[in-house]
Image (cartoon, rainbow, N blue to C red; front, side, top):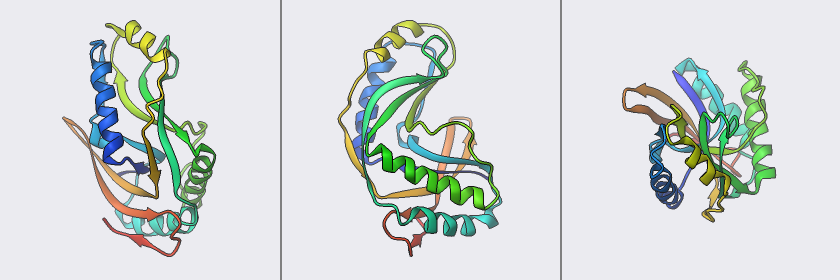
Length: 192
């Protein structure tokens, strides 16, 4: 099953992203916008994982990431990957305690690599994927708006991350929480 590790967003941040997406949709660009409830802060994409490996994965993540403290993060700025002249992903940035967020991501990476998962070769750029660009229609006005920047100001505490299962459906990906890793609670892994 397709699996990844991510920090979920609280409802207040989802509401702010929904308002932001409504503004971005006004440009009527060829972008397939992400469903707001499915937006999360990915720490590690694992790909196909045998369901029998999930308990060992959760245990390894609990030992590596559990001791990390909760993080104070915020939604900050807009951007695109790989470049505004040729965008494929429209994203919202993450600000706040990004130094410790990077440490958490490295702890997750190390735990996963220790179990035989491939090491991510790209540098970690914390972001929330808002949409995927499908074409060029009305794209330039959208990119001009994104370049203006925006500090959304929505702060949140990240005190846990999830191991998710991702099922690809015609209406988009559907995510199911398999395990929860509490930050600051190294002896505890819980099911949700």
